[in-house]
Structure formats: C-alpha cells, structure tokens
Image (cartoon, rainbow, N blue to C red; front, side, top):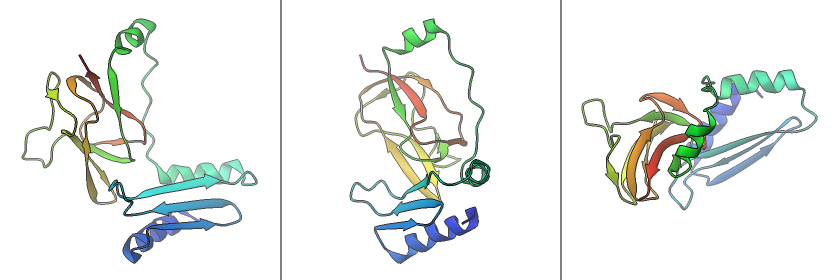
Length: 163
C-alpha cells in the first residue's frame, strides 16, 4: 500500500461518516478515527508490522510526514530555566498558524496573559483548521514554532509561566 492509497482511504473514510476503521494487511496496520466524541477531529495511526523490511517502511514514512530539522540540543542551563514553565504541545500533525487568517492579528504574543480555554493558534490538518485551546492559565514566555511551519504530534508549541 503506497501513500496515495493511504490518502485515498483517509478521504473515503472521512466522507463515509464512519467513526472508526481498522485495516490490517500483511505488512501494515492502519486505524482511522473520525468525528470522535471529544471533537478533536480525525486521527490516523499507521503501525509497522515486525516482518516488514526497513527500506520499504522508510520510503512510506518519507511521504507521510514532512521532516523538519531538529534544533541542536539545548545546554543544561537552558533546560533548568525552562523546567519551571509549562510546555503546550501540538495535539495533532499539521501546519501551525498563529493567526485565524492572514489579515487578522496573532492569537497570542510573547507576554500575553492566557486563561484556560483561550485559543492559542490554529493547526491545519487535511484542509480542516483546528483551534488549539490552552489547558492552563499563565503568561506566554516563548513561541517555539514559526508561523506556517509543519508540526508533529506532541511537538512543543509554547512555553507558559503558570505563576
């Protein structure tokens, strides 16, 4: 199964109205969940089965996700300083946007005071714009992602000082 087949399957499941589809083939398992109860939208899991060869899996993964260069590891002082902050992470894979639209102001700036439920950014996934709301109250200390950048699941987006 190649990337195009997986994308077509995701589109088909989204249009069908099914809430969950599991597909297991000889070399790959795919689980697609749409319209979940918590309102988070679509989730797709792709799992390699142990018998699958490594080069084949790398070829499929290259098409599935955009690879962004990882920053060099921060020094120990910076890690200790950041430990007092809460990290807000991306709940989905997609494209990170700081503004609701190009002609609008950004949702939050460094120094902005936020409350639980405030919209911090938007992440676009498969032409759907998902508002990312804060689960904590505090002050934005740092924005860790550039506008219009691809983000991965669980990638840090913001540092918040809860005090």
